[in-house]
Length: 71
Image (cartoon, rainbow, N blue to C red; front, top):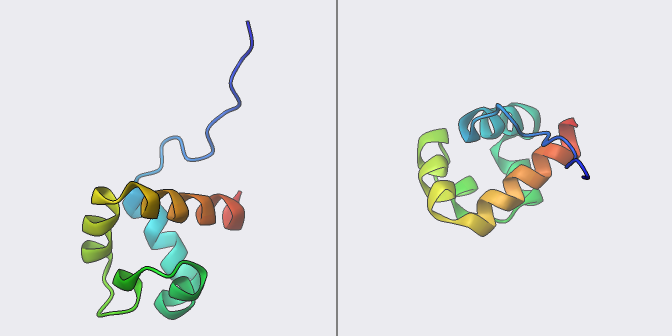
């Protein structure tokens, strides 16, 4: 029986992931990393979370950036 590698995002909420990325990059540079309009036009954590929760491909990009930046 093979074990799956540990998930580096285990225990992290999407809000925590997004907040860490915003603190690290800022909204403008975060938009440069991932071209999502909610990071450019009047960005806020609340509005971005609403979009990311409804849009799987965008959430995956945010999670991938988090892993590549912090893990």
